[in-house]
Image (cartoon, rainbow, N blue to C red; front, side):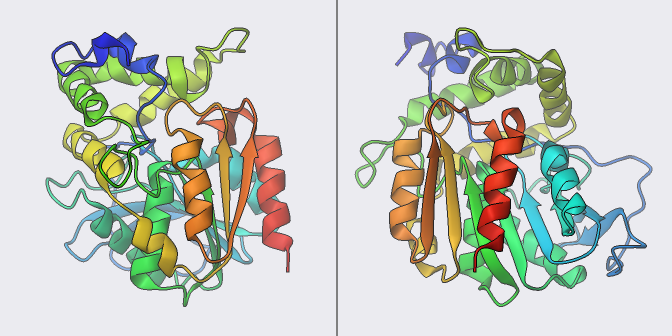
Length: 323
């Protein structure tokens, strides 16, 4: 490990090039003048976006486009539902109803002080599913969002779900410990916390510039637009949620959750994922799922759903259409 990753050093650039890192989970701030609506309208033709009230009153922003079988997207740290642009447009055009929300503390949702934990994230997702009356849904989660989907399906059951997709997802568990000796050392995540508190704005430039999209690899085609979009999403969110979520995505253990899921789940992971190493994530998750299907992608990065959207979307569509 780069010596700059020590809790004392916590060099942002060292963190970004360490090869292990943060699981995407987008952060966000609520719109100052946004309507704080009650139960969301259930008609997707008349409701393009809105807010759903969580159990504690937190307002969860969502987008709800198109009609047909619902696909529900859960984003990574510290992003927002905007990270699913390529998927929302593609699948709506394919005849699906597409729904994505901003996790609490991220994007346009409430910046709560508490509730930044995986159980509450899953409960907030259930509130969105219930308010929009989503049934037979396909749940797709990236990075931390993959953890959210896993906890949701295990905690709330699959009565309203038909399939799941985990993309570059954090399960079973990221942090190194006795039961996960191949994991990422805790000191790496301590370094992220230090960097976030020291200069969150710079950290949110370094991550997409470096490992997230693989832009630090020789010959990579760098998109400044994607870097700017990543930064914008992260800075929309609460610094408190961004800080708390590092513990959530690094230390939450989903081993038992994966074992409980009884619907087909596609596990997709880039083999050059520098954020969530695929050997400690996808390979293990697929074995723990009773109906898991593993698909890995040589050379692709953590953010492959954006950098290689055509490929990823086609594979997800094929999985959805499988009997």
